[in-house]
Length: 257
Image 1 (spheres, rainbow, N blue to C red):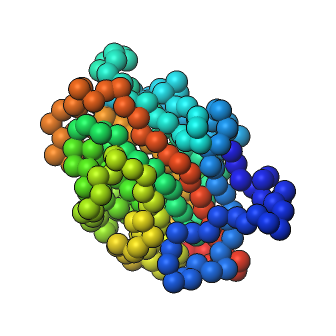
Image 2: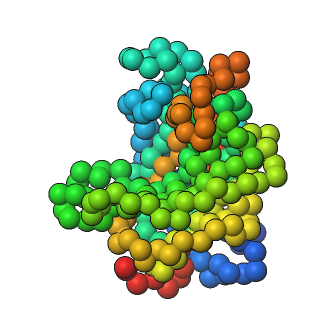
C-alpha cells in the first residue's frame, strides 16, 4: 500500500518509519514514498509489473503477488516462449531523484536467480529522444549461487557509450535466503553511499555521470551471472520476498546536478 495517503491520517501516537542508518545522519529527512505491501494485491497506482523475456526467464505478471505483508515474486521452471523458466518484478510508476532508498527482503535459495533492488529510467527511449541522461543505480544485485555475497554498482547508459563505475562484491556473514535484511542507498548529487543492515559498506563518486530521474525496480530473473552454471531445479518453485520499500528526502532538497 502506498504510504503517502496513510501518513495524512497518522495520529500523534504513530510515527512514520525512519531510515535504518545509524548516528543520526539522516535526521530531518521525511518519508516521501513507501510500500509496506500490507494489502492483498499489488497497488497498481504505484507499480507496473515487469514483463517480457530477460536472460534465462520470462517475466510474467501472474508471478507477482501480495500477501501477509509481503511482495512475493514466484520463480518457476515452466516453458514460456523459448525459455524454460519464469520470474517477475515490479517497477514504480513514480520517478525519483536523490534521497535515501531502503528495502527489506530475502532472496531465493538455489543457484540460478539474480535478485535486484535498483533505480533506472523505465522509458529509456523517451529519455534518449529528449536528450536526457540515464543512469542505473544498483543498490543490491544478488546471485543466489552464492548466498553470502551481493554487489552494488553505478552504470551510465545515456549519453552513450555505456560505462560502469564502482562495482564491488560485498561479502556478508548471513545466508541472504534464510532471513530478511535491509539494503539502502543515499543518493546525493556528489556521492552514492550504500548500506547493508544499517551499516555503510561502499561509496561511489556520483559526479562521474550526469543524473536523470529514475524509476524504482524490485526484480528477479534466472541468469548466468555470478558464476552460475544452471538453475537448481530442486529448489523450485521458490520466491523472492520483499517486506517493504521506502524513499526519504531531505526537508531542504539538494540542488539538481
